[in-house]
Image 1 (cartoon, rainbow, N blue to C red):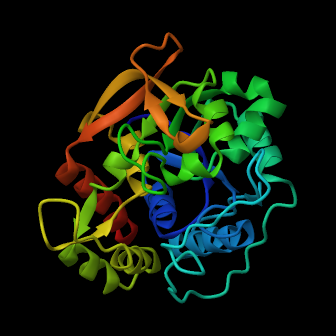
Image 2: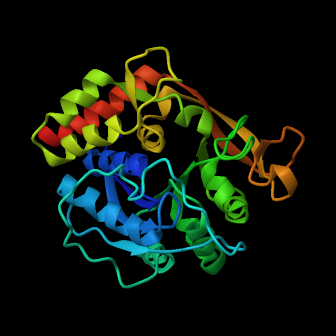
Length: 310
């Protein structure tokens, strides 16, 4: 990218990989994070706020507003939290207590204000269940015209990671996911298939962990908690980037194979929460990332994290 930084609003349920995504966004010279909206997902929304504040502290970020949003899906009574990130969402990493204060407004109101007050179009990156964004688009449909792009982390063109067919972010609130994916905002979906392929090596994670910059050290600690032995060509891959890969897609789309395809979110029966790539549908098409240069995408992530020391 060149010229003015791309202005971002990021919606998170900050577990370990959302934290990596935030570190990447905050450290990237071509991105400006305007604000962060939080939703219950990996952990409760209150813990998501704390985790996000801790990441901002480690990154040495300025006064970026963080707001708490939805605590449950649009229709269902309770949201089930994910367990793979540990009780605190960050795998038990000990961080200094933050002094940052959450925004007094609801996350939906924060997003509305950030988008409508921006002199330039805003990019939305959603790394969590889509409840906040569905509420935003329903309550304030005019925001769609001021959003130039949305990166949608979630869904799957094949298997799921929560049920046989459903990916976690979509499964948590399928109605919200359908509302968002069918909006008029130009959307690129970063699906579970790529989420589970992009990782960095043991050596990189170890080097990060030994660094004296808090952001780089935190990245290393997070990557060590995201071990994988089942994906990728090398046995020494330690840290799945997960949600952080969606940020790499935003900044380096040339490293990905992207096709325009019809995407439908199933709301019914045993397939509830499934994202169906329906070749018979005439609905608007969504850009779907289907493949990637995993080595180059991982290198792009590492370069940005290394940049904290520059």
